[in-house]
Image (cartoon, rainbow, N blue to C red):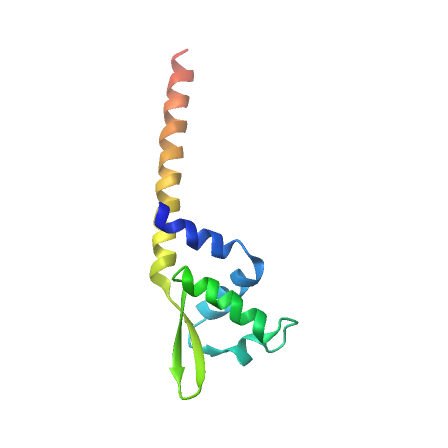
Length: 104
């Protein structure tokens, strides 16, 4: 569960969540491509991408002098499994509560 905390913290920002959504579409994107059509500066996107990289959600690839960014799905899969575990705990707790109330 503790491994997933940085992922949730990184995704808690609307801009970073939007970047992940773009990167999930597939392929590797440059900073210029990620900022095209937005009001976000390249510097801001770079900082957001670094937070996502620190959380293990994206990685950069160097192609010549350019850095391309791509989505890294394994960390998001870990976070999803954490949420499924929490959901299972809630389901079991609610089932126990229901059972207790039905016996009363």
